[in-house]
Image (cartoon, rainbow, N blue to C red; front, side):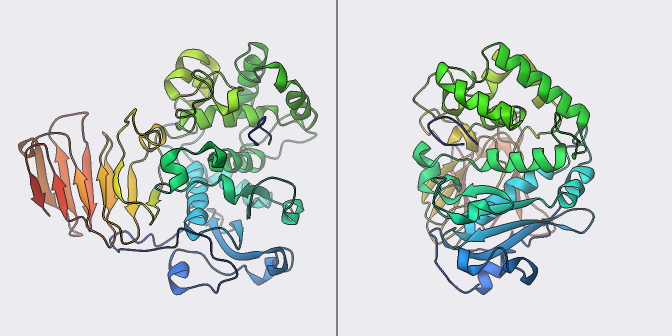
Length: 402
């Protein structure tokens, strides 16, 4: 989706929990795969894919999400993507495919992931932006561009820079929707969740008719294009999901609308109050209420990274939904916890975790892995936090060495 008008498992990755890591935050061109990159589950492009997704076209790294059937959902990256951008993309895909216990359509996502492999789902991470100059965009696969992949803690993310807006959730959702959930109004339905798609379609039709989505006369040509290619339901769902995970809360060009102004809601609360059917798609259906992946905070970050919503920190519209993070790099970096049960891993610098109340209101213990566990005794405030490689805990009354 561009700025003018929006257009368009379980991988067993040793995520170095308990181990301090340092990965490059800036793209490296035509480099050999380092031991550190290999440790992150990123390899050379497999031989069976390298003829099509070739080094001549700039492809130089590969990772995957392995479906329950043992087959891969491929993620193939060009040479200017950072390792952290590749991991971020893989993590979002894993998040969408993570089972959501008790939900109507997502309690077991085995069939969705397996069907994606049957349909040869491929995610292409491409250099630059969607400006028509990258020849690799013509290959089979869902494109996601370097300039639209934010990484938690990177400057684009902290500033919520909409010149480099985070399209990761939208484009990867399109891949899951098209090849796994399934889209109606084609000759055949190739997904596995026709009932959920029926609900998505109903919400989309209602939203378009009711001025909830596809807003503005400047959207008319875009809506006609989407209708011709049968992409209306995918783009509508992406607008809902983006706002649901806080990706438009910091956008300043509209006080009320998200997704470049074509959707009525900027935040989760606004979805619940202004798009009734959209809200129903999110409530205990398929999408987790919080982000299930371990977010690697970019190694350029220093200072205090907040998991708690703070109106003065634009990125917290999104980070409030994180619950597990790993600090990377050498900089001193700290974490402000939210109300969730968080797993927080430190980096090579000095790390402090900030808590809301006095130390007497928390129970501090160690688990069998030697990680420090700090449990808030007051319900609904700071939750239970498991800390690894963290030096200090700061409470309202004092600082405790761990």
